[in-house]
Image 1 (tube, one colour):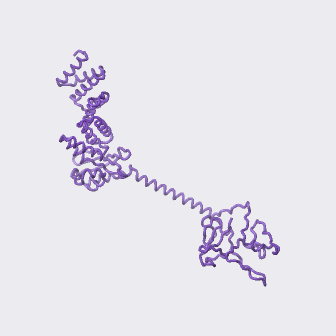
Image 2: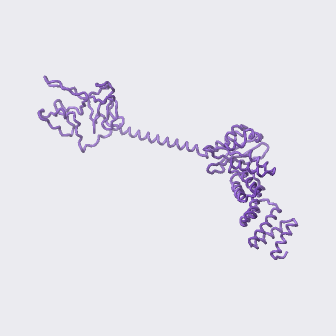
Image 3: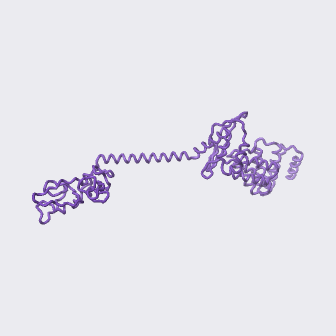
Length: 429
């Protein structure tokens, strides 16, 4: 292994003496490790990088040269480095365990030639590398432990940051901020949490005018439903003068930001348009509301009704089914009567426009299952379903609906219709 050297960090010249400055250019000297090449301070005993003992690697300050009386002074180049100390005055330099260098012609017996004194001593082929000292081993353990701690701390920090960015953490915090802004009538703060499309649909002044100023409080905020890009939360609402009830607030993701897809002001305009009989206006507004909040069942319900008025059966089917699917998850202002009406639109569309009797029967079954359905509604559904059973040649089910209809129908015209259908089946009255 190469020995340590004192080298100038400026000109690269080697020095034979352990001095801080280079005798050639005045630059700063460094003790360069022969094992790894690390530049160390002149006073170092061990390499700062690999921990090897610098003295063991070969550097020893040279002794003061002596000359025999009357002999000329020996000229030693300033760049030469004495690799090993003399074993004794007048004896050749020799690495322990190595063979002595061969004598050259004309030299004194047992003395090494001058040029051999400056050649690197051959290392034994089987000699093991110098063992690490306890200090270097301890330093390695400490460094490894510090690296492990650093990696663990970084991994924990990344995990904590990721946890704080999860929707389950971010959205409830935003929802609490939103509800608190509404409760304190800080409408500008709440409006700032709207999506871009929601802000385009209504102004801050319209939003403020739409809000009820009755005092209220909220509590028990919790996640009720979650899907990619949307998170629905429920909370307990207590308004002055009204019984407590469960209400909901929805947040959706827009361009990496969680926002409120608020469409209530727009939906009020939709209702007004349909109340005036302006189906085209209602359709346009309902489309805008569904674009703001694609998970709003009421918006899709109005889209279904608008398509029904405009005689677009395929759009009726798609929009009504979407509204009925969403209402199972997302609460809305659709009443039971409104949902019943959507099923009636679907049943009529399947029966008349699309010619799909099996789908028609499904909708009639859904309508009969509604709680609190009136006898008159039951009568109309049973008589309509009996006709579909006749179309499908299912007399047993047709007769069962006629019998049930006779028990709930009261209008003379309905009873006469039942009698006519029984006669067609050649049954006694």
